[in-house]
Structures are given as C-alpha cells and as structure tokens.
Amino acid sequence: MADDRALDVDQLRYAQPHEPIGYEPFRQSYVLPAWKDSRGLYRKRPPRDLGTARQTDKTVYWSSEVMEREWERVWSKVWLMVGHLNDIPKPDSFMKVDRGPESVLVVRGAGDSVRAMYNVCQHRAARLVTRDFGTAKGFVCPFHKWEYSSSGELTKITDRETFREEALCHDLNLPQVKAAVWRGWVFINFDDAAAPLESFLGEDYIELTKAYDFENVVRIRDVSQVWPANWKTAHEAFIEGYHVQGTHPQLIPAVDAYHAQTDLFENGHALSVYQFMSPAPQFIASLPDELAEEHKIFLREAGIPEAEWPTHWRDVPKAIIAAKKKKTGYVIDYDKFTEGQLVDDWGFGLFPTTESFLHPEGFFVQNWLPHPTEPEKCIYQVQVYAVPGIGELPSFMAVEGADLSGKTILSRTYLDDDDLDNLGPVIKQDKALVPRVREGLHSKGFRGAVYSEQEIRIRHFFEEYYKYMRD
Ligand SMILES: [Fe+2]
Image (cartoon, rainbow, N blue to C red):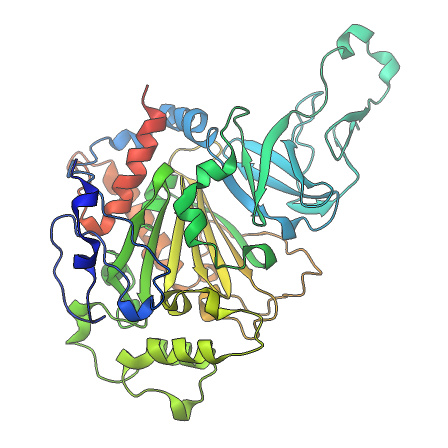
C-alpha cells in the first residue's frame, strides 16, 4: 500500500478548470480549482491505492446464498438512512421502512426523538401496517384485531379469555429496532450492539456536509421502482462518472465527469464532486464556443437576466457563483458554502448505497436496496428534499408542482417495473443499461471487471463490503 501522506495534494491542483490533464497512477482525483474554494473550506483527502485486481467474484451479483449472507452481515449491521424527521412531523407520526425482507415502523416521539419497531404482529406474523406514512395512536392487526400502542406495547388481545395464561406469558410487545436522528435525518440499525451513529458517519462526512441545511427540508418527490439487477450492479453505475460519455452523451457539454473530485472516507463512505457547467477537457475541441441549453437553464435558475449572461460557457460557473453570493435576505446563506458547492454536484455516498447529491437548495437522495427475495432484482428509491422558500425549484430536482409548505406528507409513488418515463431523462438511461450488465455478468466470456481510477469508488465499496462479508 502506498503511503498516502507522501503525496503532495497541491500537485494535484490544476490552475485552470479546463486545462486538459491526463491521469497518472494514483491521481484518481482532482482538487477544486482555487477559485472554487477561495476560503480553503474544503480539505482534499489524499488518494488511496486500492490496487488493480479484477473483480472476479461474480457470484456476489446473483447468488441467493450471498444475498442471505449480505443481509445478515452487511444490511443488518450498518446504520441505514431511512428518512427525515419532517416526514414524521408530530408525535405518533410514523413511516413504514422496508429494507430487504424486513419492514419497520419508525414513530416520532416527544421532541426530536424517534423509536423503531418491527412491523409484524406477534400473534401470527401478519404485517401490521401497509401505508408508508401516517399518524396513529397505535396499530391494529387486521388479521385478529390485536392492538399495539405507538410505542409497540401490546394493548389488546381479542378474546383474551380463550388463551391459556401460559400461552401469553411470553414477551408479546413489538421488538424494537435501534434508531437515531442526526441533523434531521432518521437512521435505523438492525444490530442492537451497533456503535453510535456518529462514529459510523465519521468525521469526513460530518465536516463536509455541515453547510447544508439538513434540518430544514421538505420531501417533495418520493419514487420507488423494482429494477432488474442486483443492488450492487445498479449502485455501481452511480458511483462513477466515467460512464457519462457513453450513457449520458447529452451531459457532455455540461458536466466535467473526467475531473470529478473523489474523496474516500472511512467506513466505506465517499464524496464525488461533478463540476457542472464545465465540459470534460477531451470534448472541449468539439464544442461550439457558445452557451449550451444546459448552461442557459442554470443561468435562468440563478435569476440572471438574459442581457447579463456571459457569451461563452467557460464563464457560466463564475457568473452563477457571483449571482448567488450577491443575494441578500434569501432563505439560504450562500456564504456558509465554498464556491464549488454553489454550482457543482456534491455527491455524498454513505455505505452501502445511500447516494445524496447535495446542493444548497436541496438534496437528491437515492438508494438501491436489496430485493426481499430475488438477488437479481433491487428496489431503486429516490427522495428529493428541498429547502422551503427557495422559489423556483432547480431542474436537478426533477419535480413539478411540488408542495413546499410542509403541511401535507407526500406519499410514496411506486412506478411499474417497465416505467422509464417517470424517472427523468438521466436515470432512465442508467436504468436501461443495468439489465445489459446483469446479463453480461453471467457470461463465461466475462472474466471480471477492471476499474479505472475514475471508478475507484467501486473498489472502495468492495473493500468495505468484504470486511463485513469475510470471516
Ligand atoms: Fe449514470
């Protein structure tokens, strides 16, 4: 293993945002150009040498045995981000959280407290609740009308006198699941012995997300869909920008995926920053010197009058940063952020698969969850949260007619398996690609994935994954 500290991070800093630079060994990430971090708020984490081995262990993508082991060893051991306090705004508000084969009820208590319990009647195993969100003093099993309080205590047994006392001497309250709240986000952990949530999140994640207004957001989009591939196959397509040129060619003029900044954190977490409004250098020669439609969208969203638009795409990020910094009395204090966070896509990944694209105005949170029974399917979920009072919503949120009042609790939309139209144009392209990979993984002619340094987060994911999976 190379000594990370021996690398001079300043050597990686490139002076001009569009200067073409080739990748060199271990230069798996670039640092914000200086003008995107004028106050030095962002401290680049050193690159890591994660080797060059092929991912020859293909059974992790389809084996039922591996799937069961993953559930026990990975998904049942880590903290899972499952929603936000504002999804359960008052005492006795609840949300149903489905993860793999389990279903959990997360209930708001007094103040900011939450509790979580298994969503299963202790009598004959019926699921108690099928709604995703609601408010209730308690839960009644539809099978035989047993009743539980909102804290999970069994409060009523129908025809109790027909049970012998000995049959009822067991603990019949709903078993609790560990739950915690961090800056508005609700997490659960199926492992009673789990270390505290903040130690799982780690210092890097906590430090680099501190400017965002996590506590004060409203959920404005919530979509769930079954995807035809293992959760890892799908997730891997979202933790590298290398595929933008093949899968999302329309983004080439607007996103510099080549110069993504990647920081690898402890516990399998990571950050990928994609520079928006900045084409990748290898495409610059083929681009006209004018604004692309994507640039115009961002300029309009920043409220810059058309007469003041720059004429060259190169000047768009600076124009938008200046416009945002000039805003006074706005609901967001842009001064808390470093300049890059005002224009770029800061994608924070929490192990195993919670990927949150953070912008000051709101967050695009995605998950690829294990299917309850089938290893070659997964549950894709996206939740979009917005800061109330921001005015017109940025296009990245892909939400029309959103209610930011916080007065109604948005229900979850379950898309049909073959519905591509309601995913948005970019996710639609990713979803269409995923089954091709699932098929190819089964071929004897495929001997295991090789990864570029642009795809280092996949190696980083597997490094953490095998810590849990290996004996
Ligand atoms: Fe993609």
